[in-house]
Length: 350
Image (cartoon, rainbow, N blue to C red; front, side):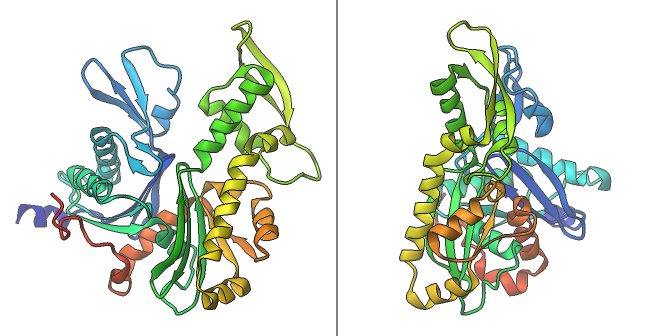
């Protein structure tokens, strides 16, 4: 009875709990939170010092008694307690202005395609532990497709490629279900790692994670550009141990990320090969849609189109497609209830 009372004063939420960023949608308000999935903790008393952007600024700059952690790896929860605290922080932040003492919102949350029952239960338990009254799970590619406005419930093929921070999800959807798919633990973070390794091997420079990500955003392209982009790479010289900077171009970064990009493209082709011929005919006509931060890589849509011989479209605001999809499910639950995944409680997992 008490839970029901507080639920009436709570704001139902859609959450994209991403490896790199967490986004929150609130009914009738839209996207209200878009912050890094990073938490800073004081190891002396286990208290949270900062969450999101404030914590990300601390990465690589903390004393020994402060640890900055990303509680999600490859799209799944790796640190349960920190994940729960982070979600609770975001729920309380949403309700701060409404003066709700004990927010008990209903939460729609997207999870990767290849998660295990145990990993699904970890998400449910973390969100419930953070204060939710009910947790509704949907598959990330389904959320992306809904957010991108694809006709997922019709008897026609829709293809979505969601390249996030920790995972790349490739799916062909028809009649409200996933027909063929691939899930790769290879996305934005692996591109950052490839840039760090390239800088080490080619220039004897040790880069930080944030620096590599910044260089990727500024200069990365998968095809040669008409006007080359130049930037400065700064890090620690591995030979002298002193600071070092060099000038690099987009061609350097393209060389660094060639292998992971090829793997993504090869898996897109493999997904199409495993798709029934009738749906392939639909895809050949309509093409596929790219979502997630990786969709913003210069030339990626052109490269995929060249390799698959299919039209490729980048959705509007690709970074927010998943959370917008969870929001649409929240707003139209009666029509979209069939895409909600069964709760792990229903499967008897305890």
